[in-house]
Image 1: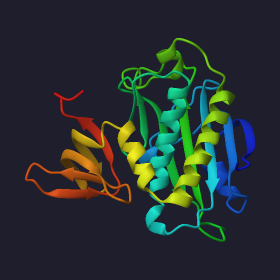
Image 2: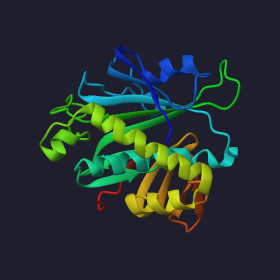
Image 3: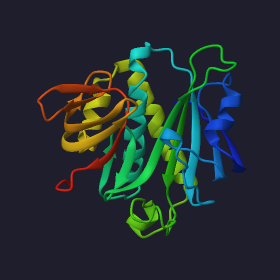
Length: 248
């Protein structure tokens, strides 16, 4: 089993940003924090990091696989978080493509994967994971869209227990990716994600919005979207920003 070396900080601006200074450290170097003052999600959104109540963690990877398979790391991270939360009793778990994890329709975890090339001697990826664990409330602007493991299960859970279980599961899925390719990852992802097939969605991309019905993933993990005109579009990156009102 892989050996994770964990460096913990009480207060830090961002675990992802801190880990960028460690790009030539051993693979599976991990930064965690009890409190992030400038946690980030995708599209430079801030991540609400309640001190001591959540898991704020970044993992350094040094992948050697072909570049076209690297996007699957995003999917396997979502799988890892979803399965870990289910292990600790979370109900209503779903994954919104590519890797936002929901519980009972509200966001409980987010993933931010960034490349780190400055000073690196090869490909480096930083996998940032935020999980809401023991929060009992959220700021007004998040109260309708965010939840936590404590709110779902009505009990507190040690953050370190989630961390250790998540890292163990992440290592196993990372080995699947390295040794077996993407087929098992995509299959498991589609089992866990109601968004992968048959959802009417609107997706925000860098080149504009797309609307249509999801119809699976391709071999690289890209989302397939059938537009109202019947065209199949491959979405490599983007964000599902809303569902049609008549969808769950």
